[in-house]
Amino acid sequence: MFFSRKAEPVTHKVAAILATYFSLDVEDTLPWCAFSQPENEDAGVTVTLPFCIATQLPVLKEEVIKQLKGKLDDATLTFKQHIASGETEVAPVTNIKNIIAVASGKGGVGKSTTSINLAFALMQEGAKVGILDADIYGPSVPIMLGNPDAHPVSEDNKHMQPLKAHGLVANSIGYLVPQEDAAVWRGPMASRALKQLLDETLWPVLDYLIVDMPPGTGDIQLTMAQQVPLTASIVVTTPQDLALADAQKGISMFEKVNVPVLGLIENMSYYQCRACGTKDYVFAKDGGKALAERHGLPLLGQLPLDIHIREHGDAGTPLLVETPDSPLSESYREAARALSMQLALSVAPRKGGVSHIKGDPIGIVGKSD
Image: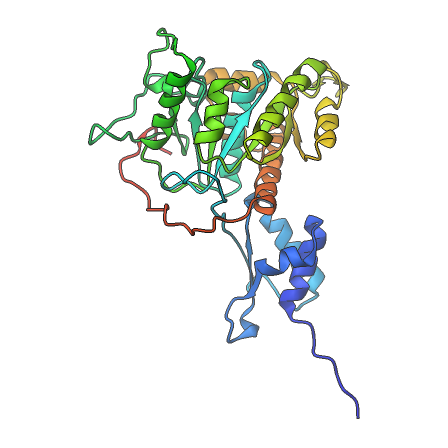
């Protein structure tokens, strides 16, 4: 008498393909896979990814179908994305699943530009995204969004509606204080202002709120890290030794306050000549990669020094909105996908559930989509 072994469920086969594709273990990918109708396995398989990679889903789906050799097709294999609310030590902010601090140990490394472009890149990968400009002394988000003269409105004189530009919701001290009135505040006062800006804004439901932190590792940064429910952080640096030394301070600060560092982004990694294609490493080479390896962190992206990044920022015409198909835009989307995936794999979902997700408020003002 012969005993036949039961065939492996197709969900396991899909999980194995995904594990290879993303360089993970099958134990990691198996929870993503389920039969679309538990009572009818022939109805197909639904894969729910815990990170956002919308621009890559057609290629991924095609690859899975190809490797399954007829077991599933375009109609019976479904991909979805669901971003969980990450665990934090501080109570969450209403409607925000994950708050990600974008920090640098020093100014001048392109942190604000990186924050804005990452926010738009995450949107293009299918996430709901907002940005909070936490740089009290030099708010630049209003300029880069092209609405420096806009002001948030309040229906109850207690809470602000965020501004909306190009589909991105935002708030900044720059919308509240005229550009010519420099904010001369001591650390505790500035920290309270930032906390109010975060807590008193009526955010819609967001998968990610990107916080453009002020440069440095002083009182404001420390207060933000301790009092704001940061899910995680990323550190922006340039390749030269001076910037790397300051970036290391930023990594150490987040480690001391138990905020996970998802990885590093090396900005101004190289300049590529448009005429001949030669790459010049103006600020040294692979310094960010070496620092990431030293701390056991991923290098989420290496972004070039390019005049178009500066031009779009100054003009208030976001790079990823104006030229979404450019190699530059793809560089930011690649970093955004890495960021989203790293967060999903390294930060546990919130234990208390999502009771802080109340639903979208009405009345977001600003530019239309």
